Length: 118
Ligand SMILES: [Zn+2]
Ligand SMILES: [Zn+2]
Image (cartoon, rainbow, N blue to C red; front, side, top):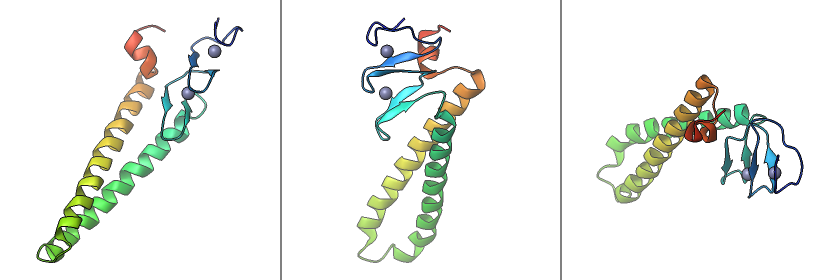
């Protein structure tokens, strides 16, 4: 039962304060997408993460290829800055993706993982 919605809620659903509604198999609230990630959109969310991480990887490979060409030019400082952004983006999205793949494999949401309840 959800006290905020004042109605019965299905099992494994949790109330999101930000969405102001109960979300079925709630994973977490995504601030980038401005919505909750749950059982309904978890698959598409992981696909999005996959595209981001592979996109960053591609950009990283391109950066490293051009690194030899630009290392003496004036754009080097800017280039290093851009490279850092790509590396951070890649590491963040890949670890986030790996974390959710792990959770899907265990059949848990991160909420259930932390609270150890099912
Ligand atoms: Zn609710
Ligand atoms: Zn939410």
